[in-house]
Image (cartoon, rainbow, N blue to C red; front, side):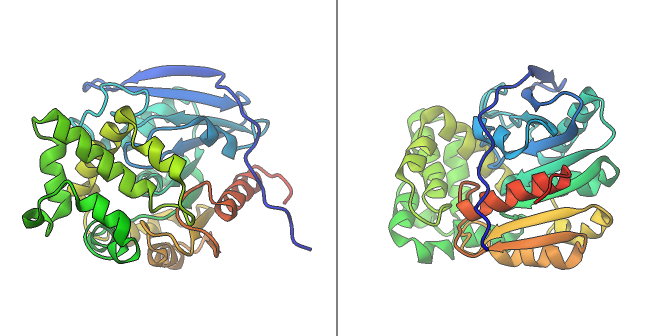
Length: 320
């Protein structure tokens, strides 16, 4: 008998919120949800630059978990908005450790999707002794091949209509390196051009992450405040290859030995090809790979959401 798909837990509000002063110019918004003192977990959002949403709180059973969520540097409710200074992968890894110490927990479950999976792997490979379990969705290891697939040639062949919108702000003579062309404009002095490019960059992503087109999501990603942080920060990280050595996250996956995990990936994930989740599962035998057949990239895909909630339930000792 086929089991019904799991869905989000009921809406919940934080029981505590605050701002973490990083001492190098950033103020990071954090919130805690669930039951104080229950199983500790940290949620790492995507982007980079995406920020947390109320639905992210609902991936965990609030009676069994005590979850910390935070908006990474420069996005969401963190300040200064869209700031690129002192904003690297390793700054974020340090922030996660500061937040863990603030919570007073020795180990916690780490949960990250898309860019959040990149950050989750970087953190867990740096501090494996602090990780009780690791859940990653839409695995992204930030190699040159992955970046080129999405921002130069690959997904462009699947979505020529949306690719045309993405390339429109860039003169034809600069389209041989679209990330660099966008970087020049997203960090340039022309505010109108900066915003137009931010919207085009952000909406390219929103228009390709779901199996079925979601017009409302594309509109949301095109909002001025969201798009500016999302595009500037994401482009900044990707231009610098996440401050990772080529292939580093798979190379160092042996450091995850002994950490139970779940890898959840859509078969038709366009931004993050399944190949890299498959390769991760080969070098991290303590994790179970769940390939979702009728799914793209987004956490909202029903099959992806089902497996993510089954994973958080399972690691909290809840019967399947």
